[in-house]
Length: 182
Image (cartoon, rainbow, N blue to C red; front, side, top):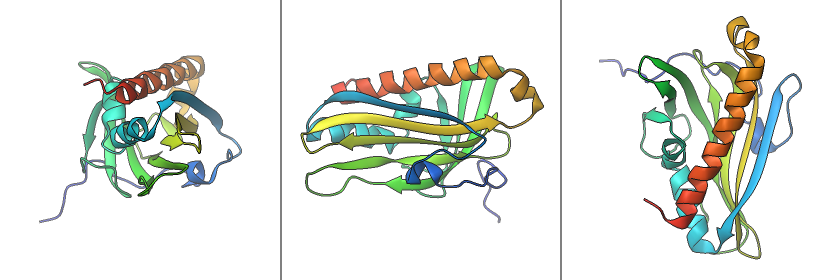
């Protein structure tokens, strides 16, 4: 029997993996955020684990359905936001993952995922917990996107507002993870 995929189709943009490499592809709107979360390896581990188990998305208010409880390359996830029948689904595929490295030192852990058919935008978004040489921990969010069709393009200002709102909710979710809130 064939395996049923959570979301169908192929990634719908050409610049796959660009959030891992840095930079901003031409023709896309860029969102980049870096937020201080606290100090120490324990804070870093909590935030990294939350990112790599979809907990950051859940804490931001999204309904998350994934093929895997742990973020792995190629996993598909559908995040939904809204209420009841007024829920917008955003199917994505994980395109890269960084896991925490053993030992200390500056490093990052997180992932990037890209849009699949049915997502309101085309593009990619990444979430990384970073710890620097002084033990300061940050959440970095990078996204590049453009509307997937004329309908979403028509709601440009509303879409930008929604993206700012989601970024602030991700930051709040990361702060909860850093504080060890359940």
